[in-house]
Image 1 (cartoon, rainbow, N blue to C red):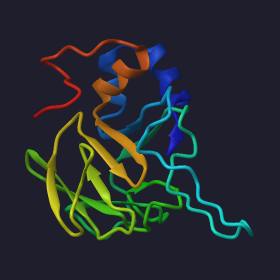
Image 2: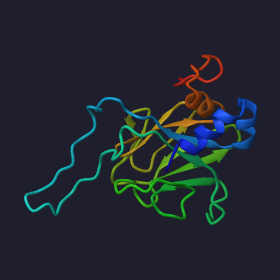
Image 3: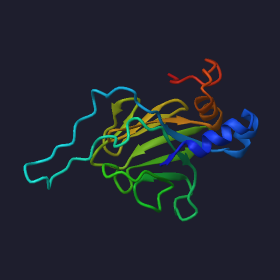
Length: 177
């Protein structure tokens, strides 16, 4: 995951169409949180400080983004891998994200999220997925890996977020159901 500053610079310097052409893929966008999430737990540290539970967002006040696109080293032609391993398509380098946490199965007109039996679970719209299960996902859905909540967005929605533009309900709803 990376800071949004480079994307913000590009969004401020071009119109929405040019931004979409420059970034034809999807993104996971982590919104900065102004207040503490009640589902977020404090790190558990024992008396000798050797045990540390890292299942919390280490940078809650920071917006971040990661491109959802194919890594040329990935051997799966029909899926994108999501995890902390550097050869994943979508790399999220956090301790509570498994090496290969989940897969996005790419089919014509459909994107399916499949949990890879990750120890810290995968969530779709704040509902925990059963290990190994799959769900169809849409733009605007919230996908969570452990304590990390990410919105699935396209370049048009990312541009709106970065420019502070309110989404048009028919064009880019936050959650489609």
